[in-house]
Image 1 (cartoon, one colour):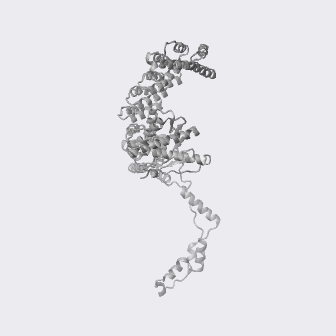
Image 2 (image 1 turned 90 degrees about the horizontal axis):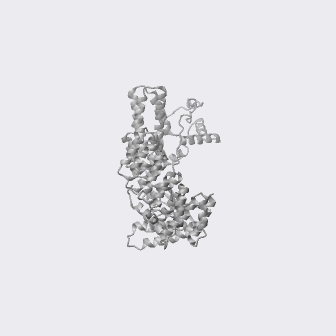
Image 3 (image 1 turned 135 degrees about the horizontal axis):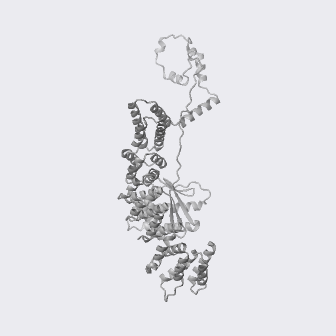
Length: 591
C-alpha cells in the first residue's frame, strides 16, 4: 500500500487559523504519522525513515518558532489542533489516535526549542507502542521515563459526568374512547347482491385503477367518511407529531424494568420470588454483555433501593435481596464484565465505574484480580476508581494486590491505596518502595505523599537515597512543598558528601534549593561555605557547585544572605557575579 494511503486527513473549518498555516500544520502531522509508520514498515538499512525524520524536524521546529507551542488534542479516532482536524482514522484497525487514547492521554504538546534527538526518541516510543500488543507497555510511563524537556502530555483527569435517570409511567398517554358510532355507519348501509361478475379476475388496467382509488365504488357515506378520516387539520398534525416524538423519547428498557420490579413487589411465594430475581440476573448479564452499563446501573440502583426499603420495613425478604446483591459481586459475574471490556470498544467507562461502585464489598477481591486480566488502560482505570470507595474500609483486601507478579497491577493497587488516603496503607508502601520496577516505586512515592502523615513524610525522607535520580527529586519536591523541616538533616548529609559535586545538574540544583528552603540559618552556613570557599585551579564541577550554591541563596530569607549575595555580585568571576545578581533580584521580588 502506498504511504499516502496509510491515513486520511481532513481539514475542517477553523476561521481563526490562516489558511497557509492550516496547510502547514496538517502536512506536518501527516508527515509525523508517515515517519512513525515508516519506522514500522521499512528495514533499519533503509534511508527513507531517516529522510522523513529530518524533514519532520525542520517542519516542527519552524512551526514551534512561529507558534511557540503546538498542542494536539486526542480523541478516540481523531486528533485536532485547536478546532482544526489534522487526523481521522480511516478504519478501526488502522487508528493512529488510538495509541494515545488507549493509555488515557488527552493531549500532547511540542514546545519551541525541541531537539532533534527528542523528536527521534518520541517517534521511537510511538512506533514501539504501535508494534507492541502487550499491556506491559504504557505510553504515559514511557514518555515520563524519557524525561523530555520540550515534549509533554496531559492525562485524563478524575472528573465524572454521571447521568441520572428518572423513570415512571407519567409519560404514558391513554387513548380516550372514540365517540363516533362506527357500527351505525355501516349498519343497513347496503344490501349485498352477489352476481357472476364478483367472481371474475380483474384485468391489469382495473387493478391499477383500484389501487389509485380503492374506495371509488363504495357507498357515498362510507367513501366520504374514509376521505375525511385521511385528512388532518394543523392541530391534528401537531398532536400526531408530538405523539411520535414522545414515542421516540420513551425509555422502554426502564419502563420494562419498572414493571418487573412491580411484579417482584407483589410476589408473595418464595419460589416465585426466587424466579423473579433470576430473571433480573439474566437481564443484567445481557446488558453487560452488550456493553449497556447504563441499563445495568439502573437495575442495580433499583435493587439497592429495594434493599433499603426492606431494611426500613424489617421485611423478612431482606436476606434474599441481600444475597442477590452479593451475587452481583461473584467471580463469575466479574468475569462477564472483564470479557465485555476486553472485547467491545465503544464503552462508556463512566457508567462502568458507577456500576462497580454500587457493588458490595465482596467485589473487592475479584476486581483486584480483574486488573491483571483487563487489556486496556481505560478499563483498568475504571476499576481503580471503583476500588477507592469500595476498599475505603477494607484496605487489607485491596492491599493483597501488591503480591501480583505484574508490575502494572501493583502500580494500580498502590494508586488506589494512595487515593483511599489511610495511614494503614504505609505498611504496604514499605514493601512496594523496594519493587524492582521504577514505575511502581514512583507511584509509591506519589501515593505516600497523599497520606500526609508523619510516617509518610519519614518515608519520603528515606526515598532521598533511592538509586533512581528522578525518584529522589520527586521525594525532595514533596518534602519542600509540605515544608517538612526534619528532612533537612538528610539533605545536608547528601550535599556535604564529597561525591555530591559529581551528581547531575538537576540534582545539585534541587538539593541545594531544598536545603535553603528547609534549613534557614543552618542552610546559610553550609551554602556560604560552598559559595565562598577558595579552591586553587577549580574544576568545572566545583565551579558548577559554587554557582548553584549562590543561586540557592535567593531562598534563604535573612539579611546575612543578602549581604553575601551583594558581595559576590561584585566579584571578578563574571559568571558567579551574574548568578548573584539574579539571585538578589529573585530574593527582592520574593520578599
